Image 1 (cartoon, rainbow, N blue to C red):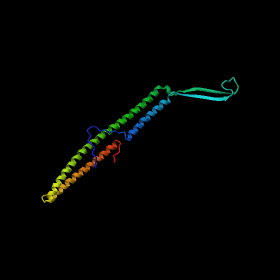
Image 2 (cartoon, one colour):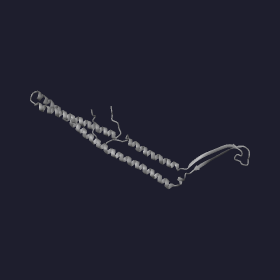
Image 3 (tube, one colour):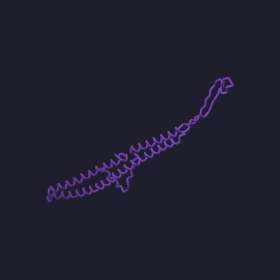
Image 4 (cartoon, rainbow, N blue to C red):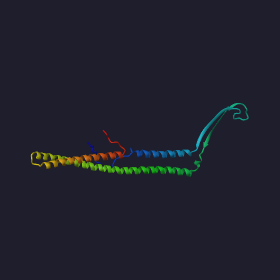
Length: 202
């Protein structure tokens, strides 16, 4: 049996966070951010401390030819050449910003297109629910008519052909109901697929 959700009275409250495309967009965004951080790190001056110890002759005092311990400590500073090219660095950062903006625009376009599709599905579902309500009302009416027609046919006051017509009318009404139920289930599945959700199998 179809579970008929309540009719929507406002815009669709759906998200697309479960779509695989959203994960791909997020991965692209993080990749660009990592590339930007790596580029900035590569052009930063690097400072290293060092310590050298030993035992020899001469030690640090070259005037003393005796064996002795010695130690040397210091700081090494390495400045990449790119560090001095501020224009190049600025262009690289601008390029990363443009890529991030492009990713955000792509994401916004996807969400807009999916939102329009979701609105169409929700409107279709509302229409089908309305039809299902009418179908059930028609079936109820046809069932009452058939009950009266059966009594008349059994009493000999209604022709068999007319009685069969009433049976056919009820069968057609039930077929329309089943058709609309199937259409509603299909539309619900399409909406769930659109937002990246799984149907409730409970």
